[in-house]
Structures are given as C-alpha cells and as structure tokens.
Figure: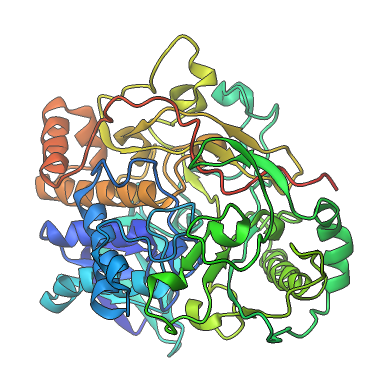
Length: 544
C-alpha cells in the first residue's frame, strides 16, 4: 500500500517515552517544527506504559540537573495537590511522595505522569509546532546516502499509512527500532572484552545475551476479600520450573537498605500496615499510600510490581524472528500472571498462612483490562556505534583504582548517576552490580559513526551492554532526549551536521552554553561513589 498522507517536520521523533517527550519538548521550545510518533496511546514509556516508577539519583531533590525535568517532577506533585483528596499534612509537604515507595521520593500513579506530559506538550501542540501521532507504528525507513530522509508509519486504528520526511530524526524507540530499519550501524547484546577492554565484559561478543524483560502489573490488597484470578494455563510450568527455587527461601534475602544503609532482610510482603516505610518488595514501588489521602478515598495501598521473580530471561526478545519474539513476550506475560496467581494461592504468608486471596489486579491503574502494563519493560535495546562509547573504565569505581571521580568529558551534554546494574540475562550469565561515580554524558555518545542526521534519545546512545545499565533509568533518559532535541535544532539552524558541533571548538562552546541557558547541568558537584544507591531488592536468581 502506498502512503496516503505526507507530512514534513524539522525534527521527527520516533518513540514517546521520556526521552522522546524530552526531545520533542526541547526541539519545539527552540522553534523547530516537530512530529512525535508513538505506537501506544500513552506517552511516557517506562514510567507510564511499562509501569516502572521513577528510578532516580540520590540527589534528585537537591541537585537540579535539568530545569525541565525538575519542572516535570514539580508538576506531578502539583497535580496531586490540585486533583486528589490529600490529607492536610500531605498537601503541605513540599516533598510529597504520593506512594511512599521506598525506591523513589516521588512514587506515583502512571496516569498522573500521562496527564502531566500532555500538559507540558499542549502549548506546542496548540501552536502547531508539535504534532503527536499516537497509535502509529513505523514500518520502514528511507535513506539517501548517509542520511535518513524519512519514514513510513501505519495508523494502527485506521490502517492508513503516512509518509513523514524530516531534517533530523531522533530515535527514541524503546529498543532502537530505527537503527535496524534504517541500517544504521549498531550493537545488540554483549560486546567482547577484547573490543572494549571492560573488566566485566564477556570473552566473546553475543548479540543474544540480553538482560531479562519484565511485564509489570499493578495490584492492591483487600484482606477478607477474594479476587483470585483464573489459573494461568502455564502455571505449573512456571511454579515448578521458575518459582520453586525462589519459594524455598520464602522470598526473603539480605540486601542493603538504601535509607539506613544497613544490611536487612527484605521479604516479599511484610503485611498490611499503616507504616510509611516498610522494607519489603510490596512497599518498594508502592504508588499510592492510603494514609496520604482523606479517610476512605483509598481502601488499600497500590503497588506496581517489577520484581526479580517476574523477570523473564528464558529467551531473547531482540535479534530473533518475529515469531520467536512474540513467543518470548507471551511467556513473559504468562510468568507475571502465574506469579500473581501463586501470590494469591500458595505464597507462604508473613503470618504463617498460605496465599493472599485479597490481592487484586488493578488494570485501571495501567490503562489495561488484564492488570498488566501496556508494554513490557525493556532494560536494553540496540545501541548506536558512536563516535565515542561510554565504557566501564569511565565510570566504575573498581575500574578507576587510584582515582576519585568518573572520567571528565570536555564535550559533556548532561549528567547521570546510577550503579552498573546488569540483570540476569537470556544466556544465563551472572549479574553485575558494582559501584560507579556520578558521571557526565559525552556528546560523542550521541553521534553515529556514519549517519549524519540521526540522534538517539534513550537507551540507544553509544554505551556498552555494561554502561547501558547505568544509563537506562528515567532521569538519564530525559537528559539524553533533551540534549538530542537541542542538538538537532542547533545544527539545523547553522546548516551543519550534528557531528560538526563536536569537532568545532566554537560550535561546541556555543551548544554547551545553550544547554546551560536551558538549565542543564554539565558537571556534577563533588560526590562520592554510588555505594548506597537503592538496589530495588535485586539479587541474582538461582541458576536453572
């Protein structure tokens, strides 16, 4: 079918996650015409459609590393004050944490972020500077030499195709789809140690060595009621083959508490309680704490489950046939539902009983019928082969013996901070969880080695499999998108390719000045290594 509609924009952003939103918002605010294409009906990516509450730096309440990200967080809190029946104490709290989840200082319901994102984009949509195409899937990418000239996308509701041409394309898809469709040089999976020199790299490259995906779900708990779901057809397989090794330990293990910094036992569920801080998995990503709201407004706390027990690593999802990818995603959903059914019926209770039938899936929280997120959580995707690649040696404490900070980059375009936190993989390799220093994001990591007008806006920048795990969290994704959106407009204004900004000292200085004017911090204050970062209760699962 030939495309029936034709559009053009200065900047085309594919993918509506936080990086895509940040890129579109930045480019439109700098005067560009922008088209944002997103396959789902919700914008926000991992924060909304994938059901992953904010994973942030320890200093998000004290260091404004991005003025627009700070505005985003402030608007979330204000949305609750404007629209929710908060208690007087919660309403007056300048650091309101709606869910009191103990992996974030602002754990909240996904639909709130959806509304806040819409509000931030609305002025540019209204002015015509930004057009958002939801429920559109990219089918193909057109190239001319070392440039991408446009895409063809399909409206998933009407079936009509649309051709979009652009000056710059920003790939903000969750798995780097444009890199594959446009034949852009990229890396998938694990690199070899002889290529990167990273101490924790594998001896041989393996594209199918990919960290597990997670299909998150939302739930609340109503003691005395019964909300047991239909037993999944594959339940016995998951219970006996996957869940059994976990259940033998009653889902309890010893990890550092990121608040007290002490080693503590973290169970699955420590019981229904009015306490603000409980060190179990149920309360880790709690997004609604009922005591923050007027009596009766919330009959139960609500949590989002993105737990190690539902990480699916049996099969890789990327770099395989469509049929194999669909099978892996289907099994990921089955695992999550099987685990929830196990919690309802067989889980050893904190009080000595068995099963929590009062657990209830809350699909309304995630905009779905079945209680699972709209989309699986991808921890990793395709990554550009970049002019500069961020390595373990640049950020890891262990790899920088004798030094007291991360590598300093003269071409910094933002900052990030997260541990190297590589989860269990589809090839059965052990996890990596090591200290890092707060680090800078180099401009060279945004520049493909060949294609002139493509920029990354999330997990697809120039990292390795190892350093990607330190860049995949929400604030880093926002910063990458913001830098790419600004770079696209700056380069187009001067009629130069983005790589010319890095190679010319005057252009680089001007571009960094533009970022600073927008409130982007290019260097960290002096902080020590990230030894006390929240680890979300994760440990390597048993071998199988």
